[in-house]
Length: 183
Image 1 (cartoon, one colour):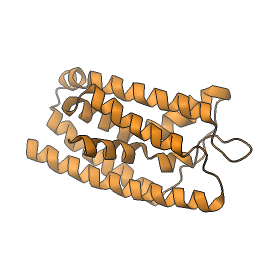
Image 2 (spheres, one colour; image 1 turned 90 degrees about the vertical axis):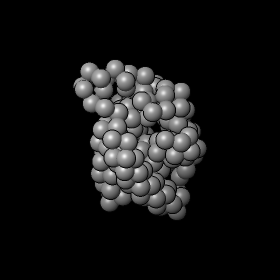
Image 3 (cartoon, one colour; image 1 turned 30 degrees about the horizontal axis):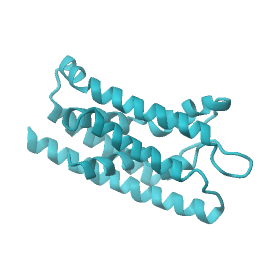
Image 4 (cartoon, helix red, strand yellow; image 1 turned 180 degrees about the vertical axis):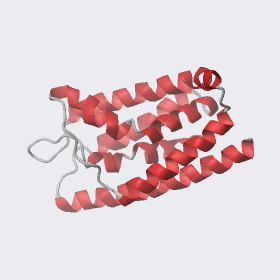
């Protein structure tokens, strides 16, 4: 997978626009910065860990990287289709203070199954640094959305989230086809 496609894939999988709709907010309507930073750091670390462990994990499961790429493509297509139909995730109860960065920002918003599958398949093909770097770009996108507030801006964020959801479907189809060609 090329570097540009890897960044698009992680942006589409983490979908900062969709995640912004359910991040803990201040009274002013802005997202709370500390939970976003904590969740983002956890996402980058988790992606790096999965990418680093992807080779041994797939060998232990006796799955070839090409076969897992096909499975990751299916996961991406299903997750992208669901996120397109349900553009705003349901609100989750949040932990107090900085712990809100763990729940609901890191998991289940950012570190969703499609990100996990993408981290494993990108780790075998692109390596740890490229995977973590692409995840960092997705976190940067979410950090850029922290100050967004207001009804018009939120509607725009929802529609941009739908566009990234459609992009995730395209990435999933590409992963599936590429995995089939590699087999």
